[in-house]
Image 1 (cartoon, rainbow, N blue to C red):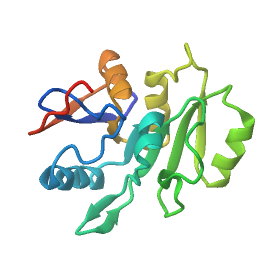
Image 2: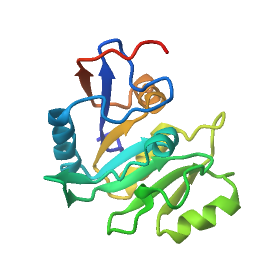
Image 3: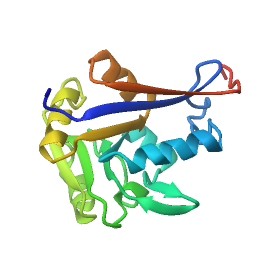
Image 4: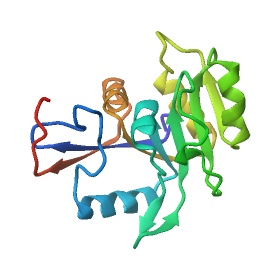
Length: 182
């Protein structure tokens, strides 16, 4: 109806509201039950979206796993305006899943070719203040046939989507732990 996918934004935080340690580590904030639920969500979605900072920090595969085995490979989307994520990242693995990179039209050509060589599709946008316009990016993903999108990180991307009124469902996981300010 709006011209973009149903957007679910998943955030895992500690009791003190932290989504990562001071060093930027965000893996395994929640427990096994929450991780299993997220893998079920991935299996039910057309695509999983992460920002470049999450891709660089965690190198996620973004597959849906069950019992330690890959059960589903939703399309993988990374928002990387400057093409900083290296082509050897897991999300660029040639495993049958579609891979999209939302980037700026002025992203360096020297970085474009290695990403394109992985088979990933670059979707360039005219950046505004160095950022890919999110509404336009969602509309383009819908035109690529993606009807549902699970956003898994990071905090900046989630905040920008929420501020833009682009999130349909917010999935908030709270872990029974404290990380603190430092």
